[in-house]
Amino acid sequence: MASATKRACDACHRRKVRCTGQQPCANCSQAGLACTYDAIPQKKGPKGSRAKVISELRLKEHQKKADHRRQDSNYNYGSEASSPSSPTSSGSLTQELIDGCTDFYFTQLYPTMPIMQNEQLWALAAEMDTSVEASCLLCSFCAFMLIQPGMETKIGQSMEPLVGPYSRTSLGRRLLDEALRKRKRCDYIENPSMNTIITSFFLFGCFSALDKHNTAWFHLREATTLAQIIGMQEEKTYTTGPYLAMMSMRRLFWLLFVTERAYALQKHRPLTLHVTINLPSAAEDPSRPIAGFIHLVNLYRPFDDTFVGLWNKSRTDCSTLWLAHLQTELSQALPAVLDGTETQAADLRTSQHWLRTIVWQLSITNNFLSSTSSDSSMTFGYPIEIAKDLVAVTSQLSRQSMEVHGVGLIEKIFDVACTLIDVMSCVPIDSQNFCVGPQDYLNHLVHLISTLQGGRSRYLPLLITKISDTLPPHMATSIIQPMVPIKVEQSPEIPFLQHPDSSETQSSNTSSPYSTPPFLHFYPPP
Image (cartoon, rainbow, N blue to C red; front, side, top):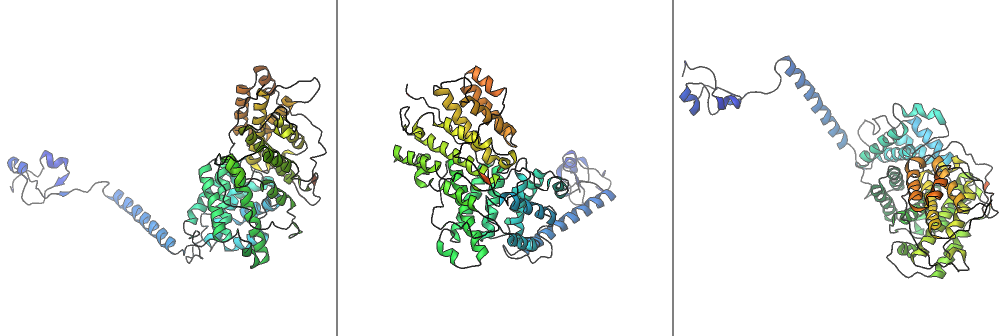
């Protein structure tokens, strides 16, 4: 064997082994080769200097992963981080960005969601480098602003340098991912706080804007569940604690109350929050009045478990008298003159007419409508009256005041328009020359949706398809092609008064959006 050729047999060669000088394998013994059974596998991969470079890179990667594991182990799940490294080390969340979003929040959004105060945001900004909870809230807060379609702030183009190399939407998504990643370090379920509830609410708004409604619903229910854990549904909870904190907590409960009911109507979901505590006082913060917010709560209060159960078909105890009374209550829910901003008027008036449409849809589902009813709300043509009132309101509002509420407001206009289309296709309508009628109202609503940011790409194609599939061809063509808004004089029942101290500036898109409820096709008796 000493003079044997130093090469392996074919089988061992395929296994890439080398001779060890010990007992050869059977094939090699017969062939006089120097290969063995216990051969050692040859090393794979690059050789020489190239192998050293790759080894060094792998070593650095292992060290980097070890540093991350040590850094994560230093966080105490909801308490302050003991690691010197910052929870915001990614650099996505900057103080300049927080200031820009905070400025926009108090200028545009505070009247409809008055849940945060200047002092609270200042404290969060001061703690964001050491508190995971504060960092999560601020990330979700800024993401909520940035993710909405067509978002513009009152500081206009000066916002562009704050987002760096990203677009507003991509930066919002990055902050959303950052909030979710950091939140895993907090035991916020076992030890919830008002900040963690607000974070869940902002996450709900983000996922709604991204059209991920299952995830959005999860975070909304998460927020309402955490609110119940800390006792926000009990009046005694608000008897102790700092005044500003208790004031914001009460408003947060009612914001969740309104959001949950609107989402329940849109998505046929159940309710968890009920009228168990007092409303906030309109005079508790003279510097920032919330009368419009209280009006919004009162609009949704009648839509309790009874109505939602009927809407979701889990109950059947409905009556004509009850629904007619609900329509009357909705028509009188808002004062003739709203003491607030134009933005508040846009949200309140649109929500009011959308809710009237929802009640009418429940009426027709239960076969309570009649062409001979003395109550117009219980007739087949009532959506025409609703559309007329909505057109009168939106004709007096600026585009910016509507866009600030995001796709949520557009969806409500979309619902009213689709219900009007169903009525126009089924109810005989007497057309009169030189008279504004249902076709004109629909023409205005279609044009409005096409001009609002977030409406043209998502809702206009759906609306045009419904018009084409439902209405006669000559009528559909006359509505779709011109898309020219009409001007309807404002009726004395629906004026609004802009508060002299209000500040309405650039347009935005920042409310919690909801999907469209199912449309009811009906065929009234002759």
